[in-house]
Amino acid sequence: MYKLALVLSTAPSSNLFRTALVGAFHSGYLDNFLICSGFFHERTNKKGMFYASDAFVSAKLPDPSEVTVVGAYDPASTEFDDFVNNLSGGLKTKMGASVSVSQRRSVKKYANRWHAKIFIARQGNQHRFAVIGSSNLTRNAFDTSASNNEADVLIWDDAHSETQQLAATTLAPTLPTPNENELEPPEVLISNYDPDDNRNSSHDSMNDRLKKIWQEVITATQ
Image (cartoon, rainbow, N blue to C red):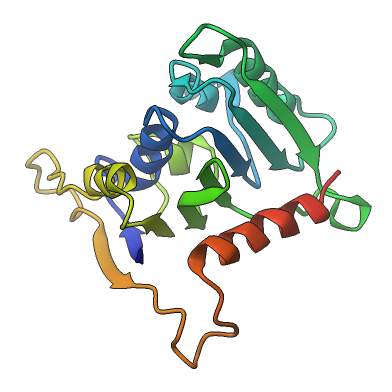
């Protein structure tokens, strides 16, 4: 049984989007990742230093593992390239080997307009964990001092014990530091995925649906 959680986030101190992605990379069993973002922050500027890649490169992935990073960026900016290069140089397997990191950009008709935000993690051919929503890999969406209000859907294989634990850890209640100006923790709504519901556009399993989304991203990029 796959489950879905709708996360409405307004509190920077409870960034479940970040927790989900970092947790998946550090899970120790997920070995194939799709990271698809409209924007990436890899820079030092007047607001200080923020490199989104720092959250991932300390992970030790299974051997072998693969990461595919998808996006589009103004050619004048190097942040997308820098993110991929930092992952390529920093990610290692548990055995100390380099991780295969590939980079894809949107095809010409989508150039500089790619805005999909999709994260899917597989174990072999099983799509165990995913986040699809509004969050980019930017300071405002991914940092714990974020200022954006975001909405994301977490999807996970609740019949798989390790993924069930990953989801439980991600969605564990995290109360903000008491402060009269602090917003409430994220609102989380959880439901089961029912492939037999007639309102679904198809009756595919969630594993098949995530597989199709992954393939659609690959088809739209090069």
